[in-house]
Length: 145
Length: 371
Image (tube, rainbow over all chains, first blue to last red):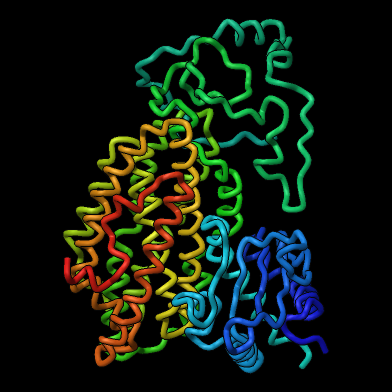
């Protein structure tokens, strides 16, 4: 089975998103691209990075993210392995992360997750489409283990 | 076809003060039965076939031909005659006073309008109110006080810009459409925080004179752009961070959903304000002084707002997890303060306003105490 944050893992998530189209329609469309940076627990070494694009109510793209390859995300969500895996473990167990472990909460202080962007207005899409992003990640509960 | 029965039909018009005279056209139509049809050849650019994109037919999709041109100066007739239509010379003026594009426009306004329409939500339907659980007394009191503050201040972002809406030249209708969605968003924020305060055993807390002063200053702003600086850039930027904090401090799904959804709405407003100021300052750089002066005063009031117990303490109690952890909450608050200042200044940068040298807000939270 593909593992987070491999491209194949996100493509599976994208298929779940398509299957849950009604939920995402109700939230409203989103047009946002972002990347996930999966760091070793030293907080410096990038172990993997994947770029994701949501267009409307569906995931339109998931690619290996390499800053030189032309994928230009609105923001990059960075986090240590242990933080990402804890969030996904909580989602797998409860359908959603525990309080204070949502994407927005983890990125609030900027220690557990943090955002990188060169443009505050593009970074603000993390907030504009936050419900969609969180519901997308919550679908990980339905991923085959 | 059956005749529609109108109650007391015989009384209609018996006391009318104006005598009805049929128009020459109606008389001719009655006499000849021949329609005029002149309007069929009196129109704007014809043959348009706007194509919907993957998300339906959006404003950007109808920006085709001459209809896609937003004029730098609004039409002199100052009426609501639709941009691009055939406009008779005798339309009465509605006396719009915001007649230049740069005074109200933002390049993301169409995108934000459509997004706002698509992402509306209902505080009655979309918040899982039945999951609300009793909280310890200190946390419920703190949440109710926070909700009191938010329900007190949120509607200013409807009242203030809509004062200007009626003054904006109708050639910039996209701006008016967006501001209408903002007003709807703020109506929902006002209602949802009032509902939250009344839903879990508490009630409304204490209103704030300093908050009211900040609202008054927003209403009194001398121009739409000056108001945008105060309201969208500073005020809503700060409230956006408060909503993010709200999602963090939530003790259950109800509070989490409320704050997360409000956060989404608020970030659209901040996005519009930032981009509008960029447009305005690019067009008239000399206005930077006026915006700076507004922000000088607004930041000063904001510092006073964050210096009263009814605002500082609820947030610290909620951040820390109770009165017993007040210090911890204050520590988290101080960590957040730097982020708030950083994001505010980056938005100023994005607007084309070099605010750093004049900014009154100290990056270090402890300086609030020293000040």
